Amino acid sequence: MLTTQRKQFILGCLARDGQLIAKDISQQLGVSEDTIRRDLRELAHAGKLQRVHGGALPASAAAGDLALRQQIAPADKLALGRAGAAMVRPGQLVILDGGTTALQVARHLPDGLRATIVTHSPTVAVELARHPQLEIIMLGGRLFRHSMVNVGAAAIEAAARLRADLYFMGVTGVHPKAGLSTGDYEEAAVKRALHERAAETVVLASHEKLGAASPFVVAPLRELAALVVPPRSPIKMIRALRATGLKVIVAD
Image 1 (cartoon, rainbow, N blue to C red):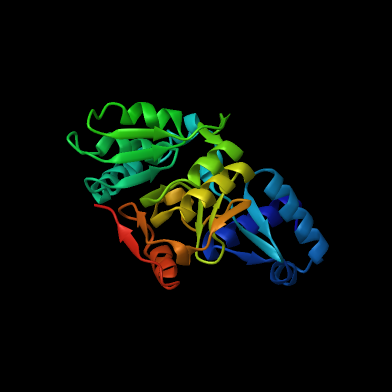
Image 2 (cartoon, rainbow, N blue to C red):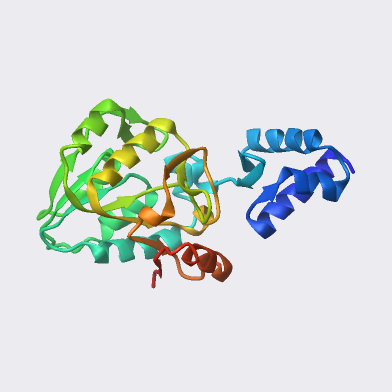
């Protein structure tokens, strides 16, 4: 079998099963594990999968920059934004992460809502400023242009002074076994710090994030209060996520 054919087979197995073990693939194809591991390295370098110990998981299509992600699943993110905004109650202190779905949450908050929203995203803060009754607190730090969020020690130190009711966490991967993950080390550290300061953490995940994994782990699924997914999400994936004990809500 040619290298191209092997790689197509590997990607087909990932799409079907959501994970693969290098030893099993080598036995199926009658080639060495070293050959399969080389294929996995090359596919990972091309952004086609995420390598893990002994095998691989699907890579997240949500790993691109903010401009690219704005083009992915806009209808899903609209539904998720409405669902997230409906969870915010008057008087709460809510942390809103960066990203395209967080922008939709900000846009769908009720006009007369009185609450305090904390964000480390300049773009989300500008959107929130359209709501005159909201108190908006920005966390500073080094601007990570890829995601348009502030990261680093300053953001983490500011997070330690919060006691939030709710945190809408943005991630690029939601996997039944690999948990919640994202593509940048510092961004993952900020997300963990914010998660630790919230009574409840909710993830709003568009379809390309479900069953995918990224290099940096944020938290296990069991630490979420709920995962909200878009309409028409794959039933098989919803069942796999619910089987972990996670509360999964399908947005309207």
